[in-house]
Image 1 (cartoon, rainbow, N blue to C red):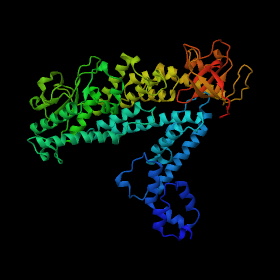
Image 2: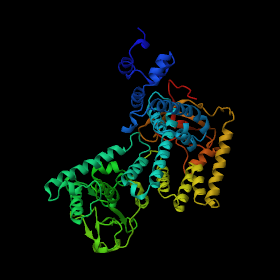
Image 3: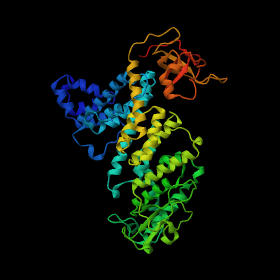
Image 4: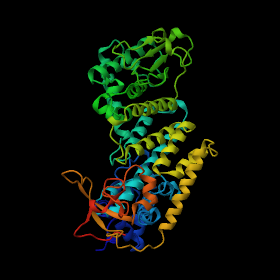
Length: 556
């Protein structure tokens, strides 16, 4: 008996639904005969199952389950995966010799094929697989990691812009905090998940609900569904319970600014796991729980951020959101060591008359605090991308620009970092244009540096014979000894992507490294090599810190 003679239900539910039957197997079967084509093509549930099996990290909303779109979505996702592989095959030649993938490559992957819903997530998933798969060659892994970081940054930028474009009443501070956390985790394969954070918030909310059974107020009064709580007694009861659950039962602890690591400022996941964090993130958590319980609060920033550790923000509640009578306006200091939450405005004279802070101002304050804290004592923090401290600071400034796009000082600082690092000059030029600084001296410097890069790239495309002083060829897999000056060596595989016969003639080296020679280069006329290293940035090395592996192969 052939497959097309089986009942459709048996074929779809008991044969084609097996995980071993891949999407490509289904496509092959579809073109074997008209009957199988009709059965497989019209089975929406089968394609939904294959989609969730192939891309389990992409959540499927309940309302999407029965929509007859899954064949088209799978087809678009497969096209996106093929585009990722094609881009990685071509990008080595495009990026040689600077080994910097352009942002346009990431934009093309995200926006390709009309930008249909599953494409960006599928692109990110495929890049994660190629960046972590051990059987991929070093060059593919390097550019997959590089492109993955740029794709993540573009997706986060788009989501933040969409969040800021929403009406103020619909903006979620917890969503913004999650996106900021994800930005700092771009160099990691595992990122903060919004669903996990919302589950923690829901657990906190549920603990407060359970405590209401021992209060004089009923759950129906405390948790209205149609309108916000409009009674001072009810609001105070709920806010006191939130404070009790967070800081006494669970053990959240606001920490002094000098005692915190970078994660306690930028990672909502770290704060929820360690129960320690800065005032801003703890206030956002408190604000979100209160909103879930029907208490609308407004964040009031009444003093600019400083390193003194003083509290500079409060939560404000009033029966009427437009209340102007100071006697009817109450404040909550989340980090105060008291369970008497609502206090009148005379307790906080500096906050009187201050307007409610928008979501944009809240996130701007959050970024300002992180930037100032890093500038104050930078040496106590580890890199969050592994690409170097200056590059991390460049990415931090770029995030601040996404949140506050009209801040000219931030744009100038970002352009200066791009210029110093010779990274993302096109992005810096576009940002300078967006804030009207096309005539600024920084614009001229960026344009000139970009022009020199383009000349260098064009010149590198011509065939150049390798002199006898250059022992190893481009494409050779080597063993790189990263610390030869010590008694032990940390060796890791690398691949040579370019070389220079004499290091003082290399524009690449003068552009990237200005204060010291490459590792292993002891003489001015000694050859050196530009390498790609697994799980590390590209770099320049001399002959005595690398040796050929016994099984070296050509990768280009």
